[in-house]
Amino acid sequence: MDWFKDLYDDFRMKTGFGSIPKEKTRKEVHFMLDVLNLSENSKILDLFCGTGRHSIELTKEKCINIGIEYNSEYIKIANERASKFSVEPKFIQGDVRHVDFGEGFDAVIIMYQSFGYFDDFEEKNILKKVYSSLKSKGRFLIEILNRDYILKHFSKRDEREIEGIKIVEERKFDILKSRVNSKLTRYHKDNIVTKNMSWRLYSVHEIKNILEDIGFKYIVGYSDLNKEPLTLNTRLMRLIFEKN
Image (tube, rainbow, N blue to C red; front, side):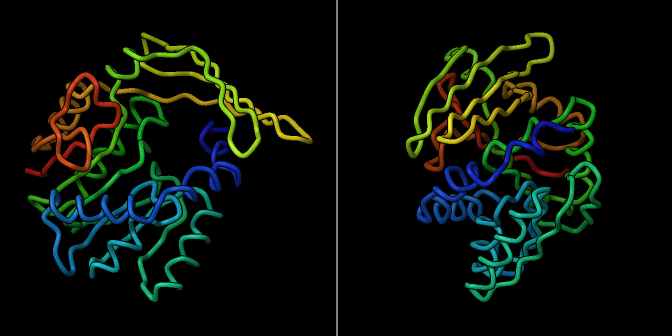
């Protein structure tokens, strides 16, 4: 089984997506509206959409939004949240490797470091599908971990506590595949939960070269939502590309 299918359980939902402040989501959406040149009725594809926090806010801004997410429980939460705000983004449950994205989008987004789950061939195929789904001059925003930063600050073992639960993460870096392979162990009161992970990391020049090879034009990259430039100390890169 693909490792990510087991990773996103109720605990990760509660302490991950569920703990993100609304103000941060709104700031991210205002950033998207700006850098992606979005306006009323812009059509947006939100890949790995999780519980729909961006899709819902973008729909509030009168955009037309479609989100794709593998986890069926997250899709259920996304639909429940959307109904509370009386907005109707369309959520599709499925594996992005196999779902038909459609076409005619003004923008595609991949947020919250949600890229790097698959092998190199599958990853590039997803990016090719992104390209095909966009209109001419449509834009692609990918929020992705910076390999250079991760290696500069690489830690083989971390220990932390969340809501009284000890969490230990042990990591190894595969230099040939540029993947961080790790084991996460949670020590709950009544049981121990273990998760295995394998994230593909990209430096900015590598992901830029891959996307340009597909046909994208690189526009700009930022270190944060305030549009600070990329540096070696940028952990999470926000990269904007355009379809030629």
